[in-house]
Image (cartoon, rainbow, N blue to C red; front, top):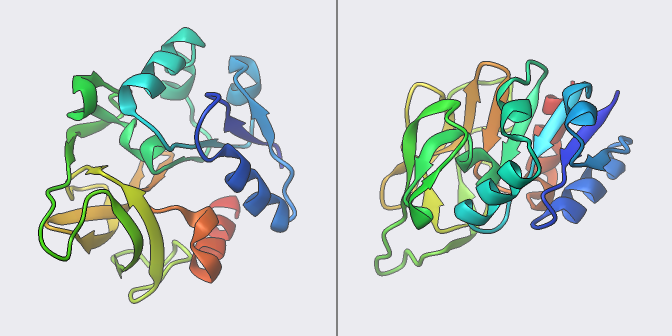
Length: 192
């Protein structure tokens, strides 16, 4: 299997790469549109700011490549948020593959922002490799709202999607590469 991790020169690329290698997959880390388009699976990673990420995507000429993918693709954390129409973060126009706007999380006592740490999830679709009650690792200050694409969620001030499924895309607001056994199962499910 040829798996491409989109190289935007920031974020959690190394940790995703190592998690995949532990599963026996050696990914190509690339910003080449043809290499991304011809991969069997594609991962759009993310840690950072929406504006900077979209600027990199546009500078590298990857917007159309990402929008036209038909093979299984996975956006992780910010990579999932970039699938939406826009983000409140820096009022950023995103890829527009999923309807909606990413919004800032609201802090409250016992609920700091950014949301960093482990949270228990509710799963609506059983074929994801994760299960209701699994704890997954999060590190984010923005999130989209639940909608038709939501297949797993948590409540963090409001209900937010943990996993989305839209056409050929999966989105993971959590970090599977840092989520232990449940994260490993999720990545195995994506690879299968």
